[in-house]
Length: 268
Image (cartoon, rainbow, N blue to C red; front, side, top):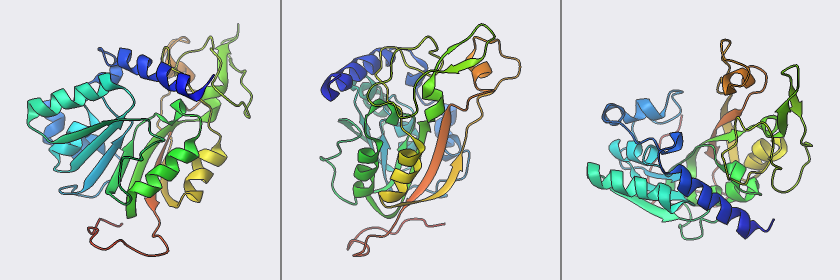
């Protein structure tokens, strides 16, 4: 499948998901009263983001950008889906917040200046592009030295599962070194309908991040296991196969040092 066609399919799929799906849940009033507490259950963010430049990457939908803006950050949200971005624009207008929206793919941030952000926050989304390292390189370019990159990704083993057998055991039916779009599978527990996805191996998920100029400060695996869930439920699947990995990474200083005039940011 040509790359342009996969992007088109994903744009259509996410425009559809912008209409009432779980991925289009707007930030609530209660969440906006304590936005950093809502965003950061792991204490990865600085105590304040007031005045910081934050890029919400591939995270349209009226939640993350609104919370950062409520906390006083200068927010840019990038997403492939105009439908998702409309939710950010509508909600920002309703709450009288300033949020800049840009429609583009996460692996092409050419319209953004070098070293223009203090924080990049990205939810699960790299599975929709063929080359995760290209995404990392773009993020490394737009982050300032010492900048924070928080992200979540689908684990490769989760992408390899194709079905449950007659004993309710999960079958790993996609090769680890599979190239190109993932095939359609019987098991769709962690797949979005109509979207084109790709498998990214650990050497790119973690190694590619380090090679792009980052140091990893923390790694977590969100627990999605439910001991009481029926076998057809994603919580049952989560008992055996971890679906996600969360990464906290820091942009290493460039050889030339900090750019003149760049603001001081929090360093742990």
